[in-house]
Length: 479
Image: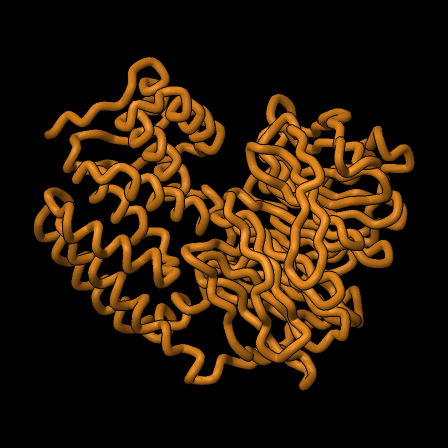
């Protein structure tokens, strides 16, 4: 076994050396969730998690990286919309950030103080925020930077995104599907109903619409299409699903064409952008596909170009002037001076890798502070740091480290599942049993046969283990 471990380490060392430049730039890119183009079509904004928001110039044709707006004070830029002269960013740690984008360098004009800003939509001066487990929040924005909270309402689920059409807001709940909200009076929003498509649990991630068409990106559940001719009662008219390995992660709708960001866990080489004609949503027509590597998230369309948030790969640009033959356009690389923050991320990863698995409290807490301040965005490193902090009884820091893993991965894959379980463990250790149970139940929903062994604790985290934690709180039992 020892010889096998040494061999693996040697191979990993060679592999890491070979990919040094790639890792270097990936740390700078962060985890890219969503994108939007300003009204002039000259600049694109790419929400990149803990790193902040990247800004690209579009005037010269291919997107050219310009600079990054850093996430304020440990923020996490997740979703964004541009309306007029302002960029509205749903921040998973700070609730909402608003930037004045009239000048070359955007100015922060509003900084939220809450958390769980997951998705945002804007109509005129009214802002709608998908507020996680808190539901839907509605506010009125008055330039240059004033927000008046108008109303809030439960969505009967955990809200991840929102799209507003007329007097109704449609919310993608990650645990109960689509929530229909009457927002005729923004001061008294009213929950109307939940609409599902995949019993017993419908998973809504992103929602977008146009006229009487509403689409929900539902991960591995595909993409349901709804007719909202009767806006208070959406009717499911079709459901695109390409198998359990294919995941609908992002969507944009323009002129009856649906631009679907599709990820494939089994065959990552076929990740990319799929185009569908939805003029007759009950009879969808496949048009074309652009294939590129890396997981996908949000999509936006401007003119003859579609842009895809390509998670750790950054931004993808696709020429869709010919819908049946979309063509990938090269994104101009960031200038060298834009990568000055990358060595810091590389250095932090080295510090985390160097931490002993047990007995490293003071050192681990200091590394945690550095990682948080820098916007470090490596999910595997954050997971290790969380485990080291949990071992050291630094529970609040450990909880935040595991939440960082969730923010980067969207709680997908083995790392996302294990992070959710460990959030439950830490909450148990903090005496917050009810919150711990919620995490365990959510982990069971996420489970796809995942498992991870923790030799330092003598446990294997898998489905059976989590089911046991529903019956008995977690306690440290050293191996």
